[in-house]
Length: 261
Length: 261
Image (cartoon, rainbow over all chains, first blue to last red; front, side, top):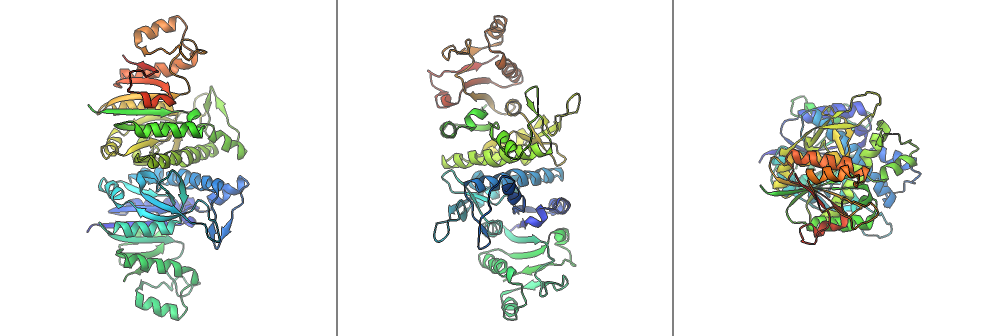
């Protein structure tokens, strides 16, 4: 099977013009087929503040009422997505910006109201592997904003990490899929204050050992649990790396954490 | 050649939820291949007001500084475009939202500064007929926001009527292209106060006569001049019609103005 990179960049890269520019240049240079998934960054919160909207959170998750949905739709799909696409075009990378609604790429269910009403938040129902494969076959590089749709005419706000892993799982049916999470650290660290403590390779066995020794930062655990879940569902490899290291991905001296089963 | 509809809807439809819903339902039902181009409506101005930005106009054209570019990018590409795409998907129309940057569909030159600096405004340089044809070949229906890019990483604000006519001209190389302007009147009127005074057919000859008799409303003249220019450059037919009449387009009792050469 042909190799496909699914690459997720987080808010800290998006919020930094110079870092984003370098990252996009590296993304454009990366050989082969690739899909970029971007997070939202702080811009949505800043716009909400300017508009006098109160950002409501529950357990670290944003509650998305109608006004907040409009804000994230504007910022993610309008501002960030198109700035990325225009910059990639300047690097001769034939990018196409998408939300889940475009070509019905990612449909979702509005999260049911239980103790908390999260509002216009979507849990991924289906990733349209066929539509994404058709675009990739033309060497079009999808750039996906963290928004989905319910199939009944409504946009929904969806976590970018989840979009990345669900997309990687779906694409594994036809591609050898490598899922890359680019963030601000050099990889998964055994000592959060030591950038040289990167774990180069994680598998279920040593992951269990690290967990029992409490050496993995608690904030990384949901990400890693998701990574292993993606691997069990067909993804070939998950890599957690610093955004600046993308250009070094296929080199021997690459620093980052590769996760395999 | 196969028939292709290029349909432009203006702000008055976009600003009216019920009118837009009806229009999109009619658009989805229209048989054959089609491209939708939407204007901006009042939402961009409303958002600019809320953010305390001053809307600067020159001869009826918006001056687009950096802050205003971000506003139109958010409103056109994020809010309006994705709301339209999600609604079309609900009507089983496989829409894909685009700006000029996506797949390099429409590149533009930043307008040179002469007496006035229009800021981030783009004059269309090239419409990528090949990319749009590839999408249409897959029965993907492009929905284009009035934004272009300069190829150097910058988004540009571009008039939606111009995008519609330039797209129609470019697509005429491979399709029998019908360019439809949907607006709030039943067509070109000889009496602006009488909706029954629609001119059913305009050609260069009777247009010259109407002009000499001063019976065409001055505001329509640039639109009509553009229509004739598009026809001379390969477009098969231009139709000016009320948005609600789209479902009646191919019927004998259709009311609207057809323009041919």
